[in-house]
Image (cartoon, rainbow, N blue to C red; front, side):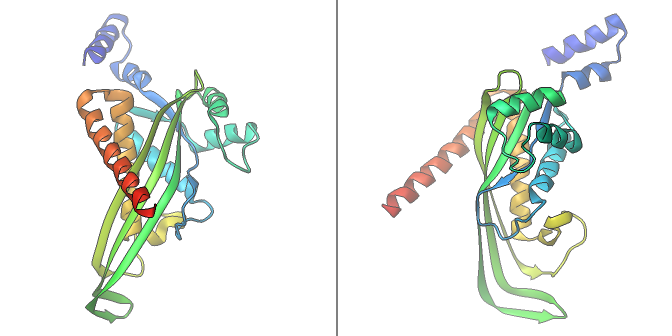
Length: 239
């Protein structure tokens, strides 16, 4: 609040529009193509950039970030000879960030995806439309890294999880929502889990990078601790 008030006062003094100052005050990020280390059946060529674009939209929607255009980011990646692998380390991330004028590079890797469908019985089907008879649940985990383009350091690291459930009504295809290679996941449990993870990432980044309050960070730290505890329990069971 104090920072915004100072900006508005500066605008009145020097005659610069407040909206222009507010735009400059936003953190500029570039969202790199997502990578996949899971067995997700919906992952195919092009999905990584689709997820990048979707996260970019979510970040812009927070009104706290400016996002570099995908074409500019892709050109910078190719200039660093990373076009084939797309793998961006902290060091190359800093170079790319400077090339595109971004303060930070955001990188996401889908590390886990699970989907379970159970037949509950009593379902009916008519002309490709199924009603009842199944219940589905999807889970996705995304490892997030944010690289500071000035220092080359990885400043923010977080594993974000999302779950979704669906059932009762299932249609073969939906219009709207996802496009491209993810179009078939519209309104499916997988699609809802994907969208949920991207919203969670954008909310977390706004909290950690912009708001920086103990209240919002406490929420994410508690979630992370629950995730870690759940992982520890699973390791104990496997042992």
